Image 1 (spheres, rainbow, N blue to C red):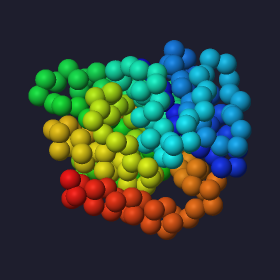
Image 2 (tube, rainbow, N blue to C red):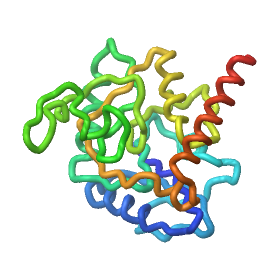
Image 3 (cartoon, helix red, strand yellow):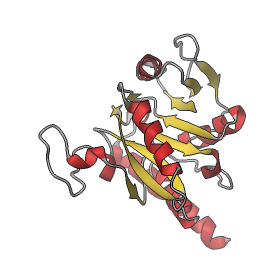
Image 4 (cartoon, rainbow, N blue to C red):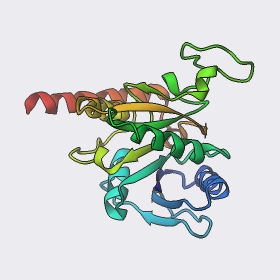
Length: 232
């Protein structure tokens, strides 16, 4: 599986990306890594990483992800946000969980997302998800379970999940829309046992955007998608 990292830094500060790439190479040295960047200058990264400037029409992470997947090809990918840091078991557990799910013929596997410290809902390690506290963790952190939606800050995704969709041109809530559309097609999304550290909101902070502003932009984008759906 190729790791796809769409990245944008308005200020050209690539330190988060550098740490993300180094963590992947350190703990999953056989993983191919492709970085699609936008910013004032190209990031300088460790050897063995494919670094390519994404087209100016790729305004969002979703658009960059679709473009990278189409350009480099493949049946499945790991999406990796540029402000995440892998742990020793991030890729091992994610791959094992995906393989186990794919072996179940009655499940149409959607996206499989990691858990994290900075995440919404069931992916957040602070959420008990109906479990017991074992001291250092909730017992459900050792389980894989289905959900209606995941945030793919780090997630397994198949090429078939991208087919037939026009990627949204906005950030917040584009994942909600994509997950909902896949559910309509019969897919089930899953939370993996895999954990990744997520700094969170680094791209929007570099643009000087607050959470309220990101929220407004995302809701406006969702509204435009709903209007287009109604019109069709």
